[in-house]
Image (cartoon, rainbow, N blue to C red; front, side, top):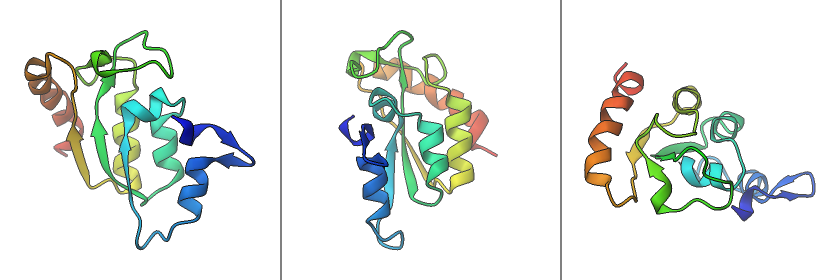
Length: 125
């Protein structure tokens, strides 16, 4: 999460966005790790419209502390502490093109179908 720590007038990620050509460089938002790094995924995606084209969708177990998340903290999207409606809607407004479910938990086979069902309400429109 070092890329979201304050450096001068912004963060290292702000510098990365500013110093790269938007015609050539797009980003992938792994919302779990953005949140674990201390940033708000919806706000970050909204701040940089058309720079994020891919989203790794995964939620964090309620109570996961910033900077201490890990694979065991992955839960079904919508059942954790991330504001999934705000994040998904920010992505849709900002030009997100692809959504990837990433579940690194030991029960991913059970959780992924539930995440798919949850996301259909946002992404089937």
